[in-house]
Image (cartoon, rainbow, N blue to C red; front, side, top):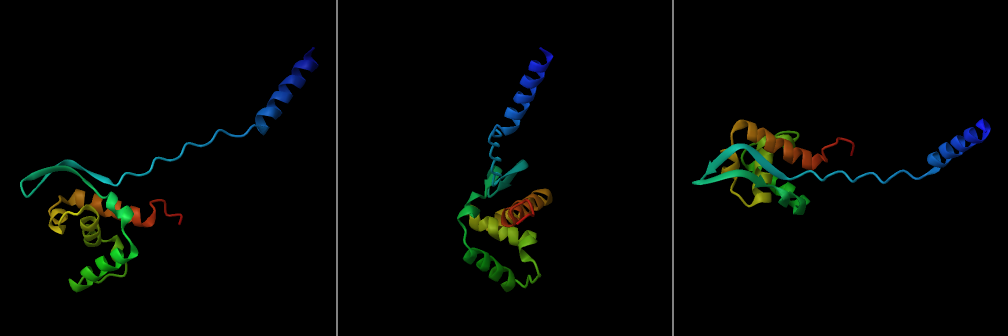
Length: 128
C-alpha cells in the first residue's frame, strides 16, 4: 500500500514538473505622466501633473532638433540627453507646453522630469 502511495506521489511530482508554467503577467507599462508632489501654478492655471506620453510618437529627428536647440544656447555636453535642459526641451515637445512651463518647476520636480525622460530614452532597465 505504501508503495502505491509513493508511486502516486512520484507520478504527481513528475506531472507537475512537466506541466507548463502559468504565463507570467505582463509587466505594467511605465506611465509617462509626471505627477507633481504639490500643485504647480503656471500662467494662472494650477497643474498636478503633466502628460509626457507624446514622447512615444517622437522621432530621432526630434532628438536632433532638441540637440540643436541646446547647441545654439551654448549647452555643449558629451551626453546631453541626461541633462535637465534636454529633458525640458523634450518634455516641451512631447506635451505641447512651452519650455518656460518646465523651467518654473520646483527643483525636485525638475529632477523627476529628467529621470522620466532619461528613463524613457534608455529603457529604464539598463539592459539594452
